Length: 486
Ligand code: FUL
Image 1: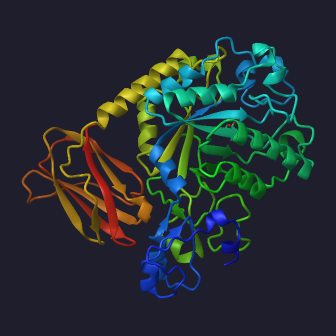
Image 2: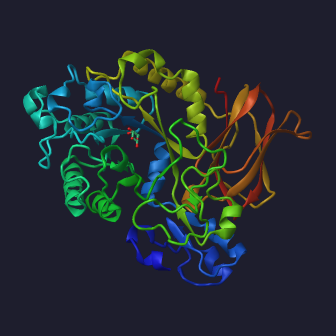
């Protein structure tokens, strides 16, 4: 139980039935475990039941419901045509000619994105806000005579358009002299995030990647993740922390590919906060493992985390803007694939849209985002499954039938009420024209927050039947939808 004594934020145990620490199966049945559950001496059967009652924090749940979030990669690299700066760029290099954060946020909001996250500092160390911690920032740029502040501009635009704001802050800093010196750098980094999380209103997501300079620069910094994450939680209790944080997991690739079987309740421990068990039960698990939470994993696991997946991918080949990629903006077809593989596969999409040297989202990207938004609105405007929004409960093997309203469909959407946990292990979708003979249209494993299954082609039917073939506890299905997406 050592881990339970670790950070409070991972151990909250909400007991719906009053008791939270009993040992009998019945007592465990009534208990919900927020964010983390340790199995102790539970039997395999009890473990299944406990796994089914592992639930997200309110912040993780809200984050999952945003579905579409956007990354803005913008810094000196935009002007040097690089992906990674080396930290020796002059602050004058950063010189957007027509910066328009309203255009970023309005374009993204219109396409359905509810959160916009800016690279306040990338690996080159250049700060897009006038920080007190270093001279390497916009305050020493000729841009706006040193009075510019991109973070503040984005804040105003997010407020104007009712969009949440997130910040990417790179711990790897190729400019800071103290990088690689241990505590002095930790102090410096904590001062930077303190400024960002104090002076710019409500921050919804903080994104830390794990990059470290030892290979490139010969400087090795051991990051004090526990302290960084604690700082975020103290200053912005409503924020979720991603990747090296402990709320949101990297899906494992940057190509927009989610897993067909995606468990938010996973045996993979968050990468930070000292949670790595020196003797993990499921040793080989990493973010890229194909299976993070099936029954096979559960059988071996000593504990589980609510640690849901985020799919980060760029609308262009690079993360930063390069004029040479203007004709390489992903096609609408590619964005649809990414949507189904992320939002449609129990993940949140974090789509990067890098502003150009003017400081605007380029016309080609803006046009594609507009098309994507239009497609989303058209596709999911009308649910053809009558009564599909009524919550229902199914034990393993139980099914429910729905009348199909007129019109063809080519996608089935299923949602679990994840506030009560992720439970479904196997489902089947059948259709019928007469209510007597049924044809299997699709089968799958996990549902989670949202699962969209595409059918090979558009078709019609009079009835739809959803069978929950396998579930860890009575499944709570909150949405069954039938849509035409093409
Ligand atoms: C990575 C960085 O190295 C890339 O430049 C980019 O910011 C990506 C989202 O995270 O770790």
